Amino acid sequence: MEITFEHVTHSYDVNSPTANLGLDDVTLKIKNGLFTAIIGQTGSGKSTLVRHINALLKPTSGTITIGDRVITSDTNNKNLKPLRKQIGMVFQFPESQLFEETVEKDIMFGPMNFGATETEAREAARTVIKLVGLDESYLTQSPFDLSGGQMRRVAIAGVLASDPETIILDEPTAGLDPVGRKEIMSLFKDLQVKGKTIILITHNMDDVANYADAMAVIHRGKLIAQGFPKEVFNNQELLKNDLITLPKSAEFAKGLMQQGFHFDKLPITIDELGTEIKHQLNGD
Amino acid sequence: MPGDSIIYRLDPRGKFLLTFYFVGIVFLANNVASYAFLLAFVLFAVYLSKINFGFFIKGLQPIFWLILFTVALQLFFTPSNHPIWHWGFLTFSKEGMVIAAYIFIRFVLIIFISTLLTLTTTPIEISDSIESILKPLKKINFPVTQVALMLSIALRFVPLLVDETTKIMDAQRARGVDFGEGGLIKRIKSFVPILIPLFVSSFSIAYDLAIAMESRGYKDGEGRSKYRVLNWSKRDNFMILFMTVLTIILLFLRSY
Image (cartoon, rainbow over all chains, first blue to last red; front, side, top):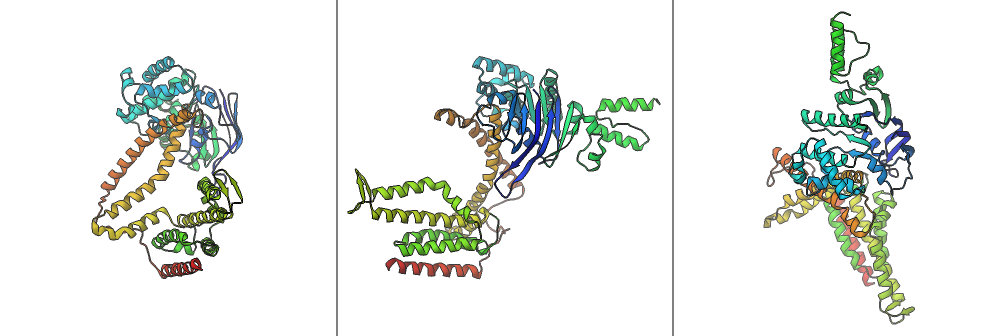
């Protein structure tokens, strides 16, 4: 399911003097089956952008095409369920969406809303709880008795349970410890390898370098760059204007360049960096 | 609403008390002259505030149905010896029309004057003035500072809770909840997934706030200095004088 933004503009509070542009003429294609990262400063419009994909927000002008669904400013609020079933969305601090008595019921909430039977939903809960790294014994507990990290996993499970084709993640690892962060990111990478489309909003450039196949940079509501992470992180224009920061490996490589190393393109992952250094030390 | 005019610059305590006072004396008006006089005063105050008149009309909107209902009640249920039109228990008469018109003007006056207060005074100024007005109650051990603090915190929580609600609604919508669809029971049920997370997060925000305040050394009671100091000026004295004159004229018009 390909997602296309065409000249999408979104303005908050259209009829008030405080109207401001959340998105300004964004044209963007998110390819099917890829892991796409969206980066940009706080308040740049990343969250506004992704909320358009499942029609939580509608554009002020322009169109968004998701598979065969077209969303414009006058799209009706009814009949959005099929779209929302296909697009799973993990919000920032998703643990705030938990409300049921047990973890199982909370995970079943999504699938049941989308028309699954109770048996199917229960089966889905059993599958996804393991996927997020918890075991079945958690299903009978109250979500409010869990730790913050466990609540996060349950909330993510609640989104995955509806088996969406596309999963949107709005800083899913904010506030998690490094191990938890790595586990969660690997989970999403695995899901992508199995055929899902992943869209990740993040401030962590290492996550972009390590997991994403494509990236888009949003600045003040405008799309200012898109492409392969390796290309974008080597875009001198963006770096010069401080519009992006580099992953650690690229930062390290930049330091090495002052010590006489030479990189045609900055390596962005540790593996790439290691290979390059080995290569150059061996004197080829 | 941000702005600057003589009404904005009045001391919030004076504005707060005088608004209540005015709402009280609205009920003194009993004939065309007195209502016209009060209406002229309110319109003059609105003019002085330099705020777009549209905002005041908007203030009427939320209670539009209440006004309509009350006016209709007066129109059709005022007993009269000379009804223009009569059907069962419904009576339509000249007296009814007059009373309905009075009621309508009364609503407009009260809404306009309170809209004027809320538009030209920030919520924090209002809570400060309540604290200042309640100060004498300290003598009978009424916890004035705590009540004022509760008020300001409650006000501070409003935008926070609005944000939180939007966020939670979005999250549940993404999980397939359709608000405003289906029968009444289904609609009420669809609010459970919002209310519970909202309660949980309010409690945790409140808890964090309490910890943050204590760790910055907050302690209620004596000797706390004020960041915002209220200044009573000549303007405010003049305002009181003006209101007194207004009352006297009103009393005169009333018996006229």
